[in-house]
Amino acid sequence: MEKKSYAKVNIFLKIVGKRGDYHLIASRFATVYNLFDVIKFQSGKFGEFTLEGDFGCETTKNTIYKAYLNMVEVSSKVEFFFKSHKVVVDKRIPEFAGLGGGSSNAATFILMVNEFCNLNLSKNEMSNVASKIGADVPFFIYQCSSANVSGIGEVVEPFEEEILDIQTFTPNIKCDTGAIFREFRENFYKECSRDEVLRLFTKNSKDIFKTLDIGDANDLYFPASKVYPSLKEFENNRCFSGSGSSFFEIICEKK
Image (cartoon, rainbow, N blue to C red; front, side):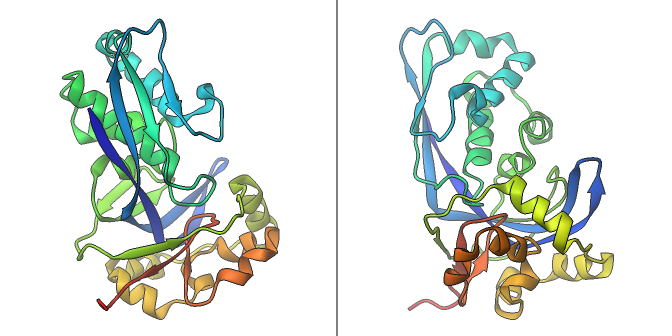
């Protein structure tokens, strides 16, 4: 019982407004198939939900644990199943890096629980559960290679294009998403127009990568580089994912 939990990058990330304390986004998410964690369900006898892995947070704050609590509310089968199974995660996706590792883990866990507990939930039903855990989690439920994502991350529309060859680079900088959004609100706030969003939503990812520079593609890059000036050392010929700290390239031609 194991499944790959893939990373993602943001081909572009634009802020289009606010909803309460949340920022509304327009973004293209793309799955990174060469970077993934591996989640396993291993059998045994356990008195409580057991999660093992090299995480940067305690179990109760982990996205998989949050997903477990939400799935228990869906069906009593889930709690019963994890009395005879534990969750083991082989972590390979860097944390605090804008690659969606925690969100991917939560979504992959939900997909596995749905399968192995025979819950027969639809993708939309699982996405509704996922949206309670984090803004990026629904994207991973739909398992599409590219998608236009909007709202606070809960609106996922698959985008048809070739599977992208994406190479990521993560410097040894742990970005605080909250600090970067505060910097954006205080010193860099702007809203992308509807016309610009529609233009980006219809353009393929390779063309966006080739034509937009790092700041035009991601509204959070300049705030992030203000909070973490050392990010500027790595920006040449790369794009910036999420609130960082990861950069990426799309390999457009095979060597």
